[in-house]
Image (cartoon, rainbow over all chains, first blue to last red):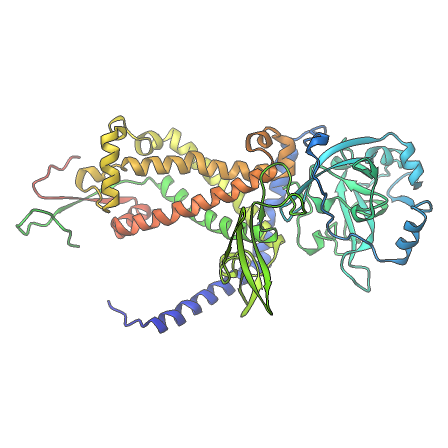
Length: 257
Length: 290
Protein backbone atom coordinates (compact mmCIF):
# COMPACT_ATOMS: atom_id res chain seq x y z
CA UNK A 1 0.00 0.00 0.00
CA UNK A 2 1.26 3.45 -0.68
CA UNK A 3 -0.02 6.76 0.54
CA UNK A 4 0.45 9.99 -1.24
CA UNK A 5 0.98 11.89 1.94
CA UNK A 6 2.13 15.43 1.50
CA UNK A 7 3.74 17.17 4.40
CA UNK A 8 0.82 19.55 4.60
CA UNK A 9 -1.74 16.78 4.67
CA UNK A 10 0.30 14.95 7.23
CA UNK A 11 0.42 18.00 9.50
CA UNK A 12 -3.32 18.61 9.22
CA UNK A 13 -4.01 14.94 9.77
CA UNK A 14 -1.79 14.63 12.80
CA UNK A 15 -3.09 17.81 14.42
CA UNK A 16 -6.67 16.62 13.92
CA UNK A 17 -5.69 13.28 15.42
CA UNK A 18 -3.95 14.99 18.33
CA UNK A 19 -6.94 17.24 19.00
CA UNK A 20 -9.23 14.25 18.80
CA UNK A 21 -7.05 12.38 21.25
CA UNK A 22 -6.93 15.35 23.61
CA UNK A 23 -10.67 15.88 23.64
CA UNK A 24 -11.09 12.12 23.95
CA UNK A 25 -8.84 12.12 27.02
CA UNK A 26 -10.59 15.12 28.55
CA UNK A 27 -14.02 13.58 27.93
CA UNK A 28 -12.84 10.45 29.74
CA UNK A 29 -11.44 12.60 32.55
CA UNK A 30 -14.80 14.31 33.02
CA UNK A 31 -16.91 11.14 32.93
CA UNK A 32 -18.50 10.41 36.32
CA UNK A 33 -18.31 6.64 35.80
CA UNK A 34 -14.57 6.86 35.20
CA UNK A 35 -14.14 9.12 38.22
CA UNK A 36 -16.15 6.77 40.43
CA UNK A 37 -13.83 3.92 39.47
CA UNK A 38 -10.65 5.98 39.91
CA UNK A 39 -11.81 7.24 43.29
CA UNK A 40 -11.82 3.68 44.63
CA UNK A 41 -8.04 3.99 44.84
CA UNK A 42 -8.50 6.59 47.59
CA UNK A 43 -10.12 4.03 49.92
CA UNK A 44 -7.37 1.58 48.98
CA UNK A 45 -4.70 4.13 49.95
CA UNK A 46 -6.42 5.03 53.20
CA UNK A 47 -7.08 1.38 54.02
CA UNK A 48 -3.46 0.42 53.34
CA UNK A 49 -2.05 3.29 55.40
CA UNK A 50 -4.40 2.71 58.31
CA UNK A 51 -3.57 -1.00 58.22
CA UNK A 52 0.17 -0.33 58.36
CA UNK A 53 0.13 2.53 60.87
CA UNK A 54 -0.95 2.41 64.47
CA UNK A 55 -2.61 5.18 66.45
CA UNK A 56 0.85 5.97 67.82
CA UNK A 57 2.86 5.91 64.58
CA UNK A 58 4.46 9.34 64.46
CA UNK A 59 5.40 11.57 61.56
CA UNK A 60 9.14 12.23 61.38
CA UNK A 61 10.25 14.96 63.79
CA UNK A 62 13.27 17.11 62.93
CA UNK A 63 15.77 19.24 64.83
CA UNK A 64 16.10 23.03 65.01
CA UNK A 65 18.92 22.79 62.46
CA UNK A 66 16.49 21.38 59.89
CA UNK A 67 14.03 24.33 60.00
CA UNK A 68 13.25 25.95 56.65
CA UNK A 69 14.88 29.39 56.45
CA UNK A 70 11.51 30.75 55.32
CA UNK A 71 8.22 28.94 55.88
CA UNK A 72 6.11 29.59 52.80
CA UNK A 73 2.63 30.98 53.62
CA UNK A 74 0.01 29.42 51.37
CA UNK A 75 -3.74 29.73 50.85
CA UNK A 76 -5.11 32.74 52.70
CA UNK A 77 -2.40 34.90 54.24
CA UNK A 78 -4.74 37.65 55.51
CA UNK A 79 -8.46 36.97 56.07
CA UNK A 80 -10.32 40.05 54.89
CA UNK A 81 -13.42 40.06 57.11
CA UNK A 82 -14.07 42.95 59.51
CA UNK A 83 -14.62 40.51 62.37
CA UNK A 84 -11.18 39.09 61.85
CA UNK A 85 -9.61 42.54 61.60
CA UNK A 86 -11.22 43.46 64.98
CA UNK A 87 -9.80 40.29 66.55
CA UNK A 88 -6.27 41.00 65.38
CA UNK A 89 -6.46 44.56 66.78
CA UNK A 90 -6.55 43.35 70.36
CA UNK A 91 -4.35 40.33 69.82
CA UNK A 92 -7.23 37.84 69.85
CA UNK A 93 -8.07 38.70 73.50
CA UNK A 94 -11.80 38.42 72.68
CA UNK A 95 -11.40 35.40 70.42
CA UNK A 96 -13.03 32.20 71.60
CA UNK A 97 -12.74 28.70 70.19
CA UNK A 98 -16.21 27.22 69.99
CA UNK A 99 -16.46 23.44 70.39
CA UNK A 100 -19.96 22.17 69.63
CA UNK A 101 -22.03 19.68 67.67
CA UNK A 102 -22.17 16.13 68.97
CA UNK A 103 -20.48 16.83 72.30
CA UNK A 104 -21.66 16.44 75.89
CA UNK A 105 -20.45 19.90 76.99
CA UNK A 106 -20.09 22.63 74.35
CA UNK A 107 -17.03 24.76 75.07
CA UNK A 108 -15.95 28.36 74.61
CA UNK A 109 -12.18 28.49 75.11
CA UNK A 110 -10.02 31.62 75.06
CA UNK A 111 -6.44 31.61 73.86
CA UNK A 112 -5.40 31.81 77.53
CA UNK A 113 -7.53 28.75 78.32
CA UNK A 114 -5.81 26.79 75.54
CA UNK A 115 -2.35 27.93 76.60
CA UNK A 116 -3.09 26.83 80.17
CA UNK A 117 -3.66 23.26 78.99
CA UNK A 118 -0.78 20.81 78.51
CA UNK A 119 1.13 21.62 75.33
CA UNK A 120 3.19 19.77 72.76
CA UNK A 121 6.00 21.21 70.62
CA UNK A 122 7.05 19.40 67.44
CA UNK A 123 9.32 20.16 64.50
CA UNK A 124 7.67 18.63 61.46
CA UNK A 125 7.59 18.86 57.71
CA UNK A 126 4.61 20.49 56.02
CA UNK A 127 3.85 19.01 52.61
CA UNK A 128 1.77 20.97 50.16
CA UNK A 129 -0.37 18.97 47.73
CA UNK A 130 1.41 20.93 44.98
CA UNK A 131 4.70 19.28 45.85
CA UNK A 132 6.73 21.67 48.00
CA UNK A 133 7.71 21.14 51.65
CA UNK A 134 8.72 23.38 54.55
CA UNK A 135 9.88 22.46 58.04
CA UNK A 136 8.50 24.40 61.01
CA UNK A 137 8.27 24.18 64.78
CA UNK A 138 4.74 24.08 66.15
CA UNK A 139 3.45 24.50 69.71
CA UNK A 140 -0.11 23.81 70.71
CA UNK A 141 -2.58 21.80 72.68
CA UNK A 142 -3.27 18.21 71.62
CA UNK A 143 -6.71 18.15 70.00
CA UNK A 144 -7.59 14.98 71.92
CA UNK A 145 -7.37 16.87 75.22
CA UNK A 146 -9.82 19.53 74.01
CA UNK A 147 -12.21 16.86 72.74
CA UNK A 148 -11.97 14.97 76.03
CA UNK A 149 -12.84 18.17 77.87
CA UNK A 150 -15.99 18.52 75.76
CA UNK A 151 -16.78 14.79 75.81
CA UNK A 152 -18.10 13.10 72.69
CA UNK A 153 -21.82 12.49 72.32
CA UNK A 154 -23.15 9.43 70.47
CA UNK A 155 -22.82 9.79 66.69
CA UNK A 156 -19.65 11.91 66.76
CA UNK A 157 -17.47 10.57 63.92
CA UNK A 158 -15.60 13.55 62.51
CA UNK A 159 -14.16 16.79 63.84
CA UNK A 160 -14.93 19.68 61.48
CA UNK A 161 -12.82 22.84 61.64
CA UNK A 162 -14.60 26.05 60.74
CA UNK A 163 -12.26 28.84 59.68
CA UNK A 164 -12.34 32.62 59.42
CA UNK A 165 -11.08 32.92 55.87
CA UNK A 166 -12.91 32.95 52.55
CA UNK A 167 -10.41 31.38 50.18
CA UNK A 168 -12.81 31.95 47.31
CA UNK A 169 -14.97 35.09 47.43
CA UNK A 170 -18.64 34.06 47.49
CA UNK A 171 -21.99 35.49 48.52
CA UNK A 172 -23.37 32.31 50.01
CA UNK A 173 -20.39 31.40 52.16
CA UNK A 174 -19.42 28.44 49.98
CA UNK A 175 -15.89 29.86 49.66
CA UNK A 176 -15.35 29.72 53.41
CA UNK A 177 -12.47 27.43 54.39
CA UNK A 178 -13.25 24.35 56.43
CA UNK A 179 -11.69 20.95 56.95
CA UNK A 180 -12.41 17.70 58.73
CA UNK A 181 -10.57 14.70 60.14
CA UNK A 182 -11.81 11.47 61.69
CA UNK A 183 -11.38 10.46 65.31
CA UNK A 184 -8.30 8.33 64.59
CA UNK A 185 -6.38 11.40 63.47
CA UNK A 186 -8.12 13.62 66.06
CA UNK A 187 -6.56 11.58 68.88
CA UNK A 188 -3.17 11.14 67.24
CA UNK A 189 -0.46 12.48 69.59
CA UNK A 190 0.87 14.92 66.97
CA UNK A 191 -2.53 16.33 66.09
CA UNK A 192 -2.44 19.68 67.84
CA UNK A 193 -4.20 23.02 67.76
CA UNK A 194 -1.13 25.20 67.27
CA UNK A 195 -0.95 28.74 68.67
CA UNK A 196 2.85 29.00 68.42
CA UNK A 197 5.24 28.67 65.49
CA UNK A 198 9.04 28.69 65.49
CA UNK A 199 9.07 29.85 69.15
CA UNK A 200 6.73 32.82 68.65
CA UNK A 201 2.99 33.41 68.60
CA UNK A 202 1.45 32.11 65.39
CA UNK A 203 1.52 34.85 62.76
CA UNK A 204 -1.52 35.94 60.77
CA UNK A 205 0.01 34.61 57.54
CA UNK A 206 0.21 31.15 59.13
CA UNK A 207 -3.30 31.07 60.60
CA UNK A 208 -3.41 33.11 63.84
CA UNK A 209 -4.71 32.61 66.38
CA UNK A 210 -5.04 28.85 65.90
CA UNK A 211 -4.24 26.33 63.20
CA UNK A 212 -4.66 22.60 63.05
CA UNK A 213 -1.59 20.38 62.64
CA UNK A 214 -2.40 16.86 61.40
CA UNK A 215 1.07 15.69 60.55
CA UNK A 216 0.43 12.48 58.63
CA UNK A 217 -1.58 14.32 55.98
CA UNK A 218 -1.02 17.02 53.35
CA UNK A 219 -1.06 20.77 53.96
CA UNK A 220 -4.66 21.50 52.98
CA UNK A 221 -5.88 19.45 55.97
CA UNK A 222 -4.02 21.83 58.32
CA UNK A 223 -6.84 24.39 58.63
CA UNK A 224 -5.75 27.94 59.49
CA UNK A 225 -7.74 30.63 61.35
CA UNK A 226 -9.73 27.98 63.27
CA UNK A 227 -12.79 29.58 64.88
CA UNK A 228 -14.77 26.51 65.82
CA UNK A 229 -14.69 22.75 66.00
CA UNK A 230 -17.91 20.91 65.30
CA UNK A 231 -18.35 17.20 65.95
CA UNK A 232 -20.54 15.63 63.29
CA UNK A 233 -21.76 12.26 62.10
CA UNK A 234 -21.40 13.08 58.37
CA UNK A 235 -20.50 15.96 56.07
CA UNK A 236 -23.69 16.03 54.07
CA UNK A 237 -25.00 19.29 55.56
CA UNK A 238 -21.69 21.13 55.22
CA UNK A 239 -20.98 23.30 52.16
CA UNK A 240 -20.29 20.93 49.23
CA UNK A 241 -20.74 17.83 51.38
CA UNK A 242 -17.25 16.39 50.86
CA UNK A 243 -15.77 17.42 54.22
CA UNK A 244 -13.50 20.29 53.23
CA UNK A 245 -12.91 23.32 51.02
CA UNK A 246 -10.52 21.49 48.69
CA UNK A 247 -12.45 18.23 48.95
CA UNK A 248 -15.48 20.08 47.55
CA UNK A 249 -13.21 21.07 44.66
CA UNK A 250 -12.12 17.51 43.79
CA UNK A 251 -9.25 16.73 46.17
CA UNK A 252 -9.19 13.57 48.28
CA UNK A 253 -10.64 13.72 51.77
CA UNK A 254 -7.89 11.38 52.99
CA UNK A 255 -4.72 13.31 52.23
CA UNK A 256 -2.12 10.86 53.49
CA UNK A 257 -0.60 10.61 49.99
CA UNK B 1 9.10 -11.68 3.71
CA UNK B 2 12.54 -11.66 2.19
CA UNK B 3 15.56 -11.38 4.35
CA UNK B 4 19.08 -10.50 3.44
CA UNK B 5 21.35 -13.49 3.42
CA UNK B 6 24.93 -12.47 3.24
CA UNK B 7 27.40 -14.42 1.18
CA UNK B 8 24.80 -16.83 -0.15
CA UNK B 9 24.29 -16.70 -3.85
CA UNK B 10 21.57 -19.31 -4.31
CA UNK B 11 17.91 -18.38 -3.91
CA UNK B 12 17.12 -20.81 -1.12
CA UNK B 13 14.66 -19.15 1.23
CA UNK B 14 15.61 -19.08 4.90
CA UNK B 15 13.63 -21.54 6.96
CA UNK B 16 11.29 -20.02 9.51
CA UNK B 17 10.73 -21.72 12.83
CA UNK B 18 8.13 -20.37 15.24
CA UNK B 19 8.85 -20.88 18.89
CA UNK B 20 6.91 -19.93 21.99
CA UNK B 21 8.87 -17.05 23.48
CA UNK B 22 6.51 -15.10 25.78
CA UNK B 23 4.26 -16.80 28.29
CA UNK B 24 0.75 -15.50 28.76
CA UNK B 25 1.75 -13.97 32.12
CA UNK B 26 4.56 -11.97 30.52
CA UNK B 27 2.35 -10.79 27.67
CA UNK B 28 -0.54 -9.66 29.86
CA UNK B 29 1.64 -7.92 32.45
CA UNK B 30 3.65 -6.28 29.66
CA UNK B 31 0.62 -4.65 28.04
CA UNK B 32 -0.96 -3.68 31.36
CA UNK B 33 2.36 -2.08 32.21
CA UNK B 34 2.23 -0.10 28.96
CA UNK B 35 -1.22 1.16 29.97
CA UNK B 36 -0.15 2.01 33.54
CA UNK B 37 3.11 3.73 32.63
CA UNK B 38 1.39 5.84 29.96
CA UNK B 39 -1.26 7.12 32.36
CA UNK B 40 1.28 7.48 35.20
CA UNK B 41 3.57 9.59 33.03
CA UNK B 42 0.82 11.89 31.74
CA UNK B 43 -0.87 12.36 35.13
CA UNK B 44 2.55 12.68 36.76
CA UNK B 45 3.43 15.58 34.48
CA UNK B 46 0.11 17.20 35.41
CA UNK B 47 1.13 16.91 39.09
CA UNK B 48 4.61 18.24 38.34
CA UNK B 49 3.06 21.27 36.58
CA UNK B 50 1.48 22.32 39.90
CA UNK B 51 4.96 23.09 41.25
CA UNK B 52 7.55 22.81 38.48
CA UNK B 53 10.62 23.10 40.71
CA UNK B 54 12.90 20.37 42.05
CA UNK B 55 15.04 20.45 45.20
CA UNK B 56 17.49 18.30 47.10
CA UNK B 57 16.98 17.54 50.80
CA UNK B 58 14.12 17.43 53.28
CA UNK B 59 12.39 20.69 52.34
CA UNK B 60 12.10 23.13 49.43
CA UNK B 61 9.35 25.57 48.58
CA UNK B 62 10.97 28.02 46.17
CA UNK B 63 10.67 30.69 48.85
CA UNK B 64 14.06 32.41 49.00
CA UNK B 65 16.56 31.39 50.27
CA UNK B 66 15.70 27.77 49.51
CA UNK B 67 15.66 27.92 45.72
CA UNK B 68 15.16 24.96 43.45
CA UNK B 69 18.01 23.60 41.35
CA UNK B 70 15.78 22.63 38.44
CA UNK B 71 12.77 24.66 37.38
CA UNK B 72 10.53 24.97 34.34
CA UNK B 73 8.78 28.32 34.34
CA UNK B 74 7.47 31.23 32.32
CA UNK B 75 8.75 34.78 32.38
CA UNK B 76 7.26 37.92 30.87
CA UNK B 77 8.77 38.91 27.54
CA UNK B 78 7.38 42.23 26.33
CA UNK B 79 3.65 41.64 25.96
CA UNK B 80 4.03 37.90 25.62
CA UNK B 81 5.70 35.18 27.71
CA UNK B 82 8.57 32.82 27.16
CA UNK B 83 9.29 29.44 28.65
CA UNK B 84 12.53 29.05 30.55
CA UNK B 85 14.01 25.75 31.70
CA UNK B 86 16.70 26.15 34.30
CA UNK B 87 19.19 23.60 35.63
CA UNK B 88 21.37 25.19 38.30
CA UNK B 89 22.49 28.50 36.83
CA UNK B 90 22.02 27.38 33.22
CA UNK B 91 18.82 28.75 31.63
CA UNK B 92 17.50 27.70 28.24
CA UNK B 93 14.63 29.24 26.27
CA UNK B 94 12.15 26.39 25.73
CA UNK B 95 9.09 28.35 24.60
CA UNK B 96 6.54 26.18 22.82
CA UNK B 97 7.44 23.00 24.68
CA UNK B 98 8.54 23.62 28.27
CA UNK B 99 7.51 26.57 30.45
CA UNK B 100 5.15 28.15 27.98
CA UNK B 101 3.11 26.34 25.34
CA UNK B 102 -0.15 26.59 23.46
CA UNK B 103 -3.36 25.77 25.34
CA UNK B 104 -6.70 26.55 23.63
CA UNK B 105 -4.82 28.42 20.92
CA UNK B 106 -3.06 30.70 23.36
CA UNK B 107 0.51 30.68 24.63
CA UNK B 108 0.07 29.85 28.33
CA UNK B 109 2.45 29.44 31.25
CA UNK B 110 2.66 25.70 31.94
CA UNK B 111 5.71 23.52 32.56
CA UNK B 112 4.76 20.55 30.36
CA UNK B 113 2.50 21.11 27.34
CA UNK B 114 -1.22 20.24 27.17
CA UNK B 115 -0.77 17.34 24.74
CA UNK B 116 1.19 15.28 27.28
CA UNK B 117 -0.77 15.90 30.52
CA UNK B 118 -3.97 14.34 31.88
CA UNK B 119 -6.20 16.29 31.82
CA UNK B 120 -4.87 18.60 29.09
CA UNK B 121 -5.82 21.69 31.16
CA UNK B 122 -4.41 22.46 34.62
CA UNK B 123 -6.25 20.31 37.21
CA UNK B 124 -4.08 18.91 39.98
CA UNK B 125 -6.92 17.11 41.80
CA UNK B 126 -7.82 15.08 38.70
CA UNK B 127 -4.17 14.44 37.86
CA UNK B 128 -3.67 12.99 41.36
CA UNK B 129 -6.77 10.80 41.09
CA UNK B 130 -5.48 9.26 37.85
CA UNK B 131 -1.95 8.95 39.16
CA UNK B 132 -2.82 7.09 42.35
CA UNK B 133 -5.31 4.79 40.64
CA UNK B 134 -2.72 3.72 38.09
CA UNK B 135 -0.02 3.61 40.76
CA UNK B 136 -1.99 0.90 42.56
CA UNK B 137 -2.68 -0.86 39.26
CA UNK B 138 1.03 -0.69 38.37
CA UNK B 139 2.16 -2.03 41.77
CA UNK B 140 -0.28 -4.96 41.72
CA UNK B 141 0.63 -5.78 38.10
CA UNK B 142 4.32 -5.51 38.97
CA UNK B 143 3.96 -7.85 41.94
CA UNK B 144 2.18 -10.43 39.78
CA UNK B 145 5.05 -10.19 37.29
CA UNK B 146 7.76 -10.47 39.97
CA UNK B 147 6.04 -13.45 41.53
CA UNK B 148 5.73 -15.13 38.13
CA UNK B 149 9.33 -14.26 37.30
CA UNK B 150 10.57 -16.01 40.41
CA UNK B 151 8.23 -18.98 40.60
CA UNK B 152 7.88 -19.52 36.85
CA UNK B 153 11.69 -19.23 36.53
CA UNK B 154 11.22 -16.50 33.91
CA UNK B 155 14.00 -14.41 35.44
CA UNK B 156 16.52 -17.24 35.54
CA UNK B 157 15.59 -18.56 32.10
CA UNK B 158 15.15 -15.32 30.16
CA UNK B 159 16.44 -12.28 32.02
CA UNK B 160 19.61 -13.07 33.97
CA UNK B 161 22.63 -13.20 31.60
CA UNK B 162 24.54 -16.47 31.35
CA UNK B 163 28.18 -16.57 32.41
CA UNK B 164 29.58 -16.63 28.86
CA UNK B 165 27.37 -13.69 27.89
CA UNK B 166 29.22 -11.56 30.40
CA UNK B 167 32.80 -11.99 29.23
CA UNK B 168 34.39 -8.69 28.14
CA UNK B 169 35.01 -9.92 24.62
CA UNK B 170 31.39 -11.03 24.21
CA UNK B 171 30.07 -7.74 25.57
CA UNK B 172 32.40 -5.75 23.30
CA UNK B 173 31.17 -7.76 20.30
CA UNK B 174 27.53 -7.09 21.22
CA UNK B 175 28.12 -3.39 21.65
CA UNK B 176 29.75 -3.28 18.23
CA UNK B 177 26.86 -5.26 16.71
CA UNK B 178 24.25 -2.99 18.31
CA UNK B 179 26.05 0.10 17.05
CA UNK B 180 25.77 -1.28 13.50
CA UNK B 181 22.14 -2.35 14.15
CA UNK B 182 23.20 -5.90 13.33
CA UNK B 183 21.00 -8.31 15.26
CA UNK B 184 21.49 -11.99 15.98
CA UNK B 185 19.83 -14.44 13.61
CA UNK B 186 18.92 -18.08 13.75
CA UNK B 187 19.61 -19.98 16.93
CA UNK B 188 21.36 -16.98 18.49
CA UNK B 189 18.10 -15.02 18.42
CA UNK B 190 16.38 -17.60 20.62
CA UNK B 191 17.52 -15.84 23.78
CA UNK B 192 17.85 -12.19 24.66
CA UNK B 193 21.34 -10.84 24.12
CA UNK B 194 23.28 -9.66 27.13
CA UNK B 195 22.75 -5.91 26.59
CA UNK B 196 19.04 -6.58 26.42
CA UNK B 197 19.16 -8.71 29.55
CA UNK B 198 21.18 -6.14 31.50
CA UNK B 199 18.84 -3.32 30.44
CA UNK B 200 15.72 -5.30 31.36
CA UNK B 201 17.30 -6.19 34.70
CA UNK B 202 18.07 -2.53 35.42
CA UNK B 203 14.50 -1.53 34.59
CA UNK B 204 12.80 -4.42 36.41
CA UNK B 205 14.94 -4.55 39.53
CA UNK B 206 16.23 -0.98 39.93
CA UNK B 207 14.35 1.76 38.08
CA UNK B 208 10.74 0.59 38.46
CA UNK B 209 11.14 -0.25 42.20
CA UNK B 210 12.89 3.12 42.61
CA UNK B 211 9.85 4.75 41.05
CA UNK B 212 7.53 3.14 43.60
CA UNK B 213 9.77 3.80 46.60
CA UNK B 214 10.46 7.46 45.75
CA UNK B 215 6.73 7.86 45.16
CA UNK B 216 5.94 6.44 48.60
CA UNK B 217 8.58 8.72 50.14
CA UNK B 218 6.54 11.73 49.02
CA UNK B 219 3.51 10.54 50.99
CA UNK B 220 3.27 11.95 54.54
CA UNK B 221 1.32 8.85 55.60
CA UNK B 222 3.90 6.40 54.26
CA UNK B 223 6.65 8.57 55.77
CA UNK B 224 5.18 7.83 59.19
CA UNK B 225 4.95 4.12 58.34
CA UNK B 226 8.39 3.77 56.70
CA UNK B 227 10.52 6.65 58.07
CA UNK B 228 13.71 4.89 56.85
CA UNK B 229 12.71 5.76 53.29
CA UNK B 230 13.45 9.40 54.11
CA UNK B 231 16.97 8.39 55.16
CA UNK B 232 17.52 6.22 52.09
CA UNK B 233 16.66 9.04 49.67
CA UNK B 234 17.87 11.97 51.75
CA UNK B 235 14.48 13.58 52.29
CA UNK B 236 11.09 14.08 50.68
CA UNK B 237 12.30 16.67 48.20
CA UNK B 238 15.27 14.52 47.12
CA UNK B 239 12.83 11.66 46.63
CA UNK B 240 10.65 13.92 44.48
CA UNK B 241 13.66 14.80 42.33
CA UNK B 242 14.68 11.13 42.05
CA UNK B 243 11.08 10.26 41.11
CA UNK B 244 11.35 12.75 38.25
CA UNK B 245 14.78 11.49 37.17
CA UNK B 246 13.76 7.82 37.20
CA UNK B 247 10.61 8.71 35.24
CA UNK B 248 12.88 10.37 32.66
CA UNK B 249 15.05 7.24 32.53
CA UNK B 250 11.95 5.12 31.91
CA UNK B 251 10.94 7.45 29.07
CA UNK B 252 14.43 7.08 27.55
CA UNK B 253 14.24 3.29 27.98
CA UNK B 254 10.83 3.17 26.29
CA UNK B 255 12.08 5.24 23.34
CA UNK B 256 15.12 2.97 22.85
CA UNK B 257 12.93 -0.12 23.37
CA UNK B 258 10.48 1.00 20.66
CA UNK B 259 13.30 1.89 18.26
CA UNK B 260 14.85 -1.56 18.83
CA UNK B 261 11.48 -3.24 18.23
CA UNK B 262 11.13 -1.28 14.98
CA UNK B 263 14.59 -2.01 13.61
CA UNK B 264 14.87 -5.66 14.65
CA UNK B 265 11.76 -7.00 12.92
CA UNK B 266 8.69 -5.11 14.05
CA UNK B 267 6.04 -7.71 13.08
CA UNK B 268 7.94 -10.61 14.54
CA UNK B 269 8.44 -8.69 17.80
CA UNK B 270 4.85 -7.51 18.00
CA UNK B 271 3.48 -10.96 17.19
CA UNK B 272 5.58 -12.53 19.90
CA UNK B 273 4.32 -10.08 22.53
CA UNK B 274 0.71 -10.64 21.40
CA UNK B 275 0.49 -14.35 20.50
CA UNK B 276 3.65 -15.50 22.22
CA UNK B 277 5.25 -16.90 19.03
CA UNK B 278 8.57 -15.58 17.73
CA UNK B 279 10.04 -16.64 14.42
CA UNK B 280 13.64 -17.75 14.15
CA UNK B 281 15.02 -17.61 10.64
CA UNK B 282 17.60 -20.18 9.64
CA UNK B 283 19.64 -20.46 6.52
CA UNK B 284 18.92 -23.85 4.99
CA UNK B 285 22.37 -25.18 5.81
CA UNK B 286 22.02 -24.30 9.53
CA UNK B 287 21.00 -26.89 12.01
CA UNK B 288 17.63 -26.31 13.59
CA UNK B 289 17.68 -27.19 17.23
CA UNK B 290 14.52 -28.09 18.97
